[in-house]
Image 1 (spheres, rainbow, N blue to C red):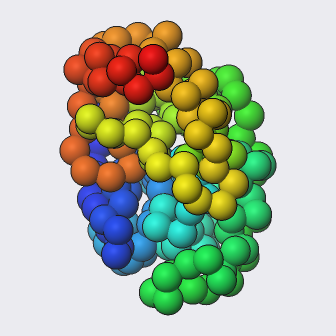
Image 2: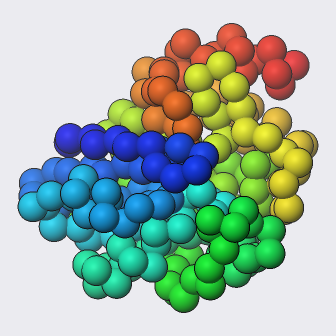
Length: 198
């Protein structure tokens, strides 16, 4: 599996394109659909996966789904965030019309990709992490030496602590590919996370 990463938009949210056997998945198309189309290249996209519904991770969703005629997946507890236009910075203020399929915890097979969906609420009620071939695409739940903030609409600090404790039960060999900034490993973040959860 080849992973293409590019920070996009005002908040430099990481968009990922995963390519395997000529097929691709797009994770968090936050902004600049033309850049995402460049990332996809000559691979065949089969779906868009959203780690959560905040505007900096979803703003190119409509254009990407329409361009490729592909489905999108989002946890149902974050569906309402796609329509909360008033809460967004002006550059992200637009109505979204893509109907996302509901993500559920467990395995999701998309072409050659086996995706394990982990529901990790806290930063938002419907935040998820995607485990794919030794990588954990963590959205805004956990970063290198940081964790997601919980002062947003539908966020919850107690839920985040529970989610972080759950993440600590996963394989320490997982490579964490977060929603912002650089990648890390769960092994390298274990001590930091333990200090937060107490």
